[in-house]
Length: 320
Image 1 (cartoon, rainbow, N blue to C red):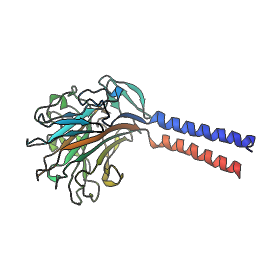
Image 2 (image 1 turned 180 degrees about the horizontal axis):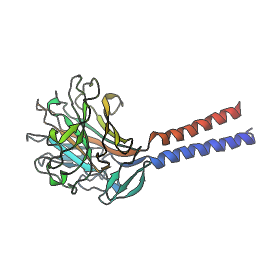
Image 3 (image 1 turned 60 degrees about the horizontal axis):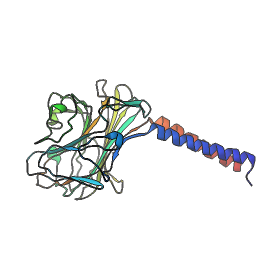
């Protein structure tokens, strides 16, 4: 039979678990998790109703929306394919995101201690031999003079892409194992209108990071995650990781830190650029998930976990 004290302890632990769950759920905010479900609209951006539009730069790349994926054919044009989307509504506002962040007038302000995690899950029908000469590029940016809300006709160039500060990560995709590393950059030349048109528009932070890159295979489902943590008003930790989506195995990852009081602290857009493969392969491009979330500083989640641990200790002591 359960004693009165044991009953109180049970109530205590149930309350502690509820409080922990509340703390985590209240503080961790998923802005969008676009899985391309039935009814997905590729060109209508409506984050409030869980729809993130994903635009393309090449007019003769055919887009096909299936349940669970969005694919793009590869055109015969030379150059690169670029894609982008906005993870906030133009006038959207969320007063409390993470611990110290918020969305105001369509811009996510990343507060000190919080982490912005954006991830793109995709696969290439044919994995290229090597893209190190023109790496795949992935960035998180603020909106500049406006939003480019339509497909483009020959490359990722638009006046809407000028004056859009942010960070980017470059990585090579290839079907052989090599120590190619990851590069992480700050967007510094913002007078040009190309989203990823020139690597000279970016300034590398520290040296290349990461270790041995595991060979990728054709059709392998990949997730590329880019984490921005604002550790103080001027200090940042930036982490880029490439995973096998199905096994969660890390294929390559690395991080850098930077002290930059002038760095962007508001964001609203992600962009991805695939170069033409030297061996003529690489494509079609198939996307399966676009996810953006804000995670609170670790101390908050640690505090919730500590409360749960103390509750478990308490009930064990009561039983002994």
